Image (tube, rainbow, N blue to C red; front, side, top):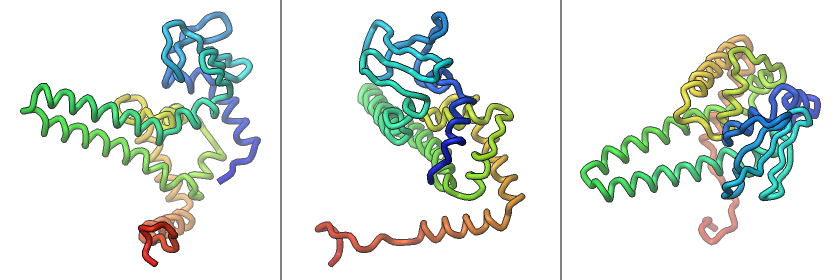
Length: 212
């Protein structure tokens, strides 16, 4: 789905780059700019700068530069970040289990529960993002209860342990449900299409693993 330029410009105007980058970087105000350690490389001297007035960030250690969208994608795209944090959490569990074998099963159950909960929150948006109800919500944004910040944090991968983000995401789902009831016909069509897509099977592959 391609959003109109004016819609993207409105998002840029409503969400300061420092607020988006702040979900992953600890920033400190210095004059008109914010400064922090680079999220793109390992460093001890902060070289990551954000200027909300100009609407961009610049990372001197890596040379990366851009607006809020450039920060989130592709370096901090949700899929990449979730894979990295999932691997980090799994490694921590394995390390702890090797030190305390008796706790292995409990730690694995806790990790699986945490990961599944995060994936459920994320999949809610994946399956509905291109639907008519979600499109209408994004085209007429109202930042009531700071739901925009919750969605942005979710897109940055913060969907596991931060209470403020979690309750905003739950509230967003409630608002989505109410919007779906107001436009039940289109919501029903979207739901039916989504179920049909889930049942469909891919055919026509040409790899050695595909059937002739």
